[in-house]
Image (cartoon, rainbow, N blue to C red; front, top):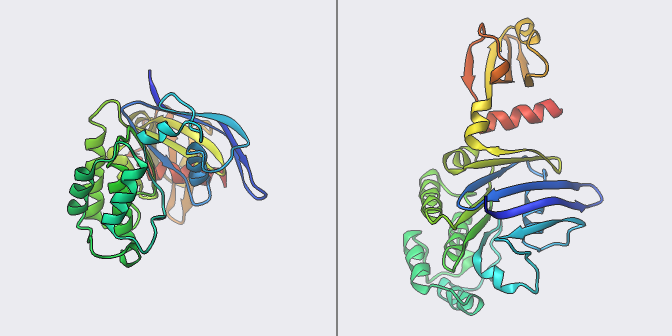
Length: 281
């Protein structure tokens, strides 16, 4: 299997946080959702992948190569959308296009203009007058307008309404119709990830909890409900986490270890993440 992105034992120590030997791999032609609560280490991991901050240990390969200052040609094939717009606030879109044309040998002016129109971005206004959603659409348009073979997206759908988010997700799905293209996307909108992702990687307090194929993950776990006594009788090895209330309890459980007497409900990606976090607490 070929991998668009391989992260091995990535480590970064801050005074109050440690990214602890993070490892996962994104197969070529696939979309991986990168999930976790605020402060879990998603943005730190992405910045380390992009060589924006110095790692303390570990290895990263993007499209089979190490991304360093000396390997500038590799950046031609990486489309990046961070959670903040870093284009100069005084510039207009046409000026940004001319600037990016000097940065990327493969810059496609016609494609950039197509996305500008599709996203209804005004060419006559400076970036400072854009809403947050408009800024995110501008970043996405820029990321898709050169020879990107992998998109690395940190909260790329943040600030967008559901209709525009759905449009953006369709664009991402169109992007990976080319089997040489891949996407790593972090988002708090887990329903979006459930629509488009092939793999889900969950980071919690700087450590990877799981990195699995989405279909297998959703097949593996179910939610069961019952009295607190009934839930308490489940095999502890099968139970990921439990929620208790005055009416009873419910638990996220390994499907293979649920007795037939229990009613089983499907678990979403959000359910799985929340129960894993609750287990930790």
